[in-house]
Image (cartoon, rainbow, N blue to C red; front, side):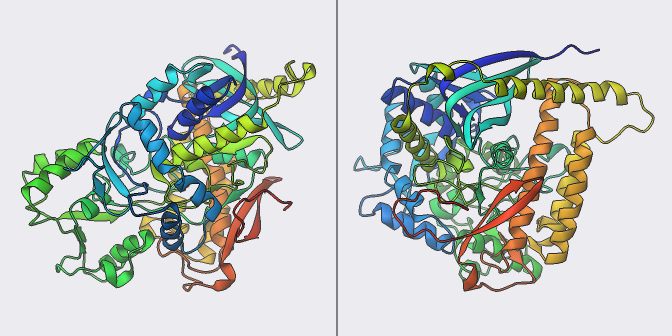
Length: 574
């Protein structure tokens, strides 16, 4: 008989779930501008966790000289066909340059031109040497006052009472320990969701994907279970990437001015449109028309441009540089083949995520979201995650009040939640002991995850069906995901790491359930490929609105909201 998990309780004024870009910067802001105690819970290690784990070679959201924050809002709103929150975009854009300057003071190398100005890449980007971006941020956090970090702890559920959050529960992925973490306010900074769909690369290489495979939608799932409102999951993100390596293409398109061409050498990008989703859509269509493969035309670029590309990819996607080196063909000698990835749910590129007010507080009192977890603010990228972390932190400081005597004691509900987690974990661990010697054991978490990806690929607009779907397919997807949710309650785990996989599966399945509900509710096609509804192939002005959702009694309930016009938005009753 396996022993019970130990239970440890920790308290802080602020709990930050997720030690990526937004989470770390929020903690830094709280340390520098308040006396509040901060606890950061990260399921990996903050030095190399989140989307910046491998680095980045550009700041993709920056207000260059001659441009304004409103220009950025207009660009992002146009790219998203109007389904954005202007208040969120503007408040983020107003801080892009401020947070960039702070990172430079922390040691980030920003490239300069011959006049000593930041080296621009396109209209909104500047070039950096960003391989060490995340270690710099983590190092600053580790030296910050009143900040403690719990690495290798997976948070599973939020603690709420009367529509207000007061902490979370989780478990160590290394030790047989459960944690009760109590705080006055909580920030969700767990990133978006990958691994919902069958990926480009199967088998051993299945985790060679654009978005971190460890971002499972955990923050979305725990928010849904806690009653938080989500928005715009149906605006999926599909990245246009270098084939096989899944390396970013923007560096080539903007840095070298490369055009999208088909196998006949025809430039097709303007034929279909130049928004982010249209660039993917055009590539899909050209392949379906028999004009593939599709490429970024790099043949003929200068030696200097070649060297810049080789160095740039070493800062964020070294596999692409290695591919050039190993093939013996430089980018100037051979065009780069491109393809779309599987769909993701990610609030840094699209508007998917928590429905928040202007200060990034969710519909659950005291619960904030920032970075890829926060919705309504697409195209925010790294600087947007930093900015949202700061915006949320400053609002937490404004609303902080010292706890009364009655609030300093551990609530009975916390003890109940800890015991519930321990019981659930014990069941999964015991299940493994029971089934491992059976002749026909139940499915493993990995097998159910593969089944989930197959369902989503075939019925909810994955790569296999060219990102297209219809009503009957979505109904089939919903039915099959419900069956997998039922089966997920009977998997086993041999250790704490496998237990993590069980919870990650359950998180992804709930996000899939919400995503399908969103896709079924927007009865139009507003974003080609991102949301290609074959029953409703045209845009409909009746759907110039937000599709939001809450999780109630095991079901996703859809809420339609009108576009936000005000400069400062506060939550209203549903």
